[in-house]
Amino acid sequence: MQISSQLPELVETSVEMRVRSTDPDYAAEKNFAAQSESAAERDFTVVEDLAAAEDYAIGDPEGLPPMQPDSLMLNLDASLRVHTRAHFFGWTQGLLQSLIRHEVLICALRDSKPLSFRADSFSMKAPEPAIFSELFLRDESVAANLIDAWVRRNFRPMICGTQDGSPIAGSAFARELDRLGATQLFVHGTHDVDGQVTSFFAFACVPGTVGPAHAYLAQLAVPFLHGAWVRSQLNVNARVGNESPKSAVANKVTSREQEILRWIYLGKSNFEIGAILGISPLTVKNHVQKILRKLNVVNRAQAVGKALELRVIAP
Image 1 (cartoon, rainbow, N blue to C red):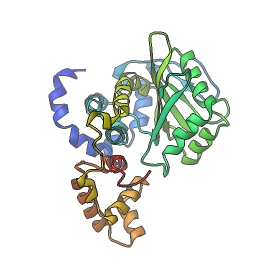
Image 2 (cartoon, helix red, strand yellow):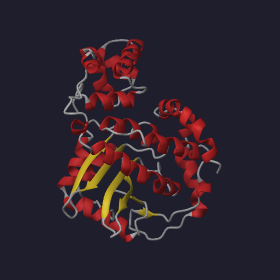
Image 3 (cartoon, rainbow, N blue to C red):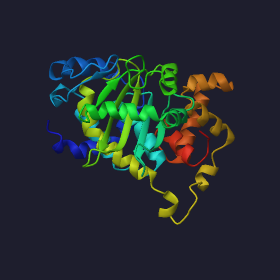
Image 4 (cartoon, one colour):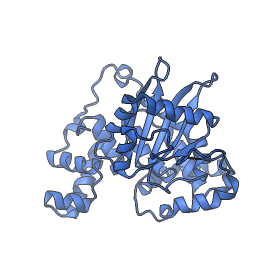
């Protein structure tokens, strides 16, 4: 795969690809999961059956669909520019969806105490994304069981369900995923030289969205995901001399635009927002374009992320 020679062109088109990757109708993604699983089937073996869980060994990158090498390089490049929570939200709920389509991403970073984590969750589909990280932390058995299953598989990416036989079966965390319809967890993380988990990432997906080929993608992408999330956790105020992130630009967002941002955050389309607010979809579209310009972002996911960071809207 002649990836390195293509990097300049890929970087130049990264903004365009980020916008296109957030479009659910983007043609190249329509049958992405089916292509991935079919192409990689011969290169992966099931190493252990954990009832509802599936676990695959790492396979051959030649099993990736044609668009994936380009998408992978664009994502790795984009991850290097993540420095805030808003950046992280915009990347994971935008461009990263072209690699691993998910409804919710739960991120956990090890704290100083054993099996103690700080966690956060990101979603454009869930009305209240924070509930997933809260439940992940509240029930210590969720993190412990998932990590134990991952460690027993020699730190390889793992797919598991939410029902009987799953590491999270019967938990409030699993029930919340069931309500969202994201009943398949795709998990991977990083560890130190002593085999202690340093970070852990769980992609909550609709069944059939991820398959064996995604294990290879996760091996490549998760170290960058780890680095990006760690950078986003740094104290921004300490770096910029306690300057408030609430900028003059954010203050220019009107109450109507805040209302539209809130509905975008809840996953509504322009048509749906128009019906709710009693205005035309074209009027909504014009408001969205103004929001993008005021917040200096290029797509809806980035707009929501920045609005949350600047407290233009509340989570």
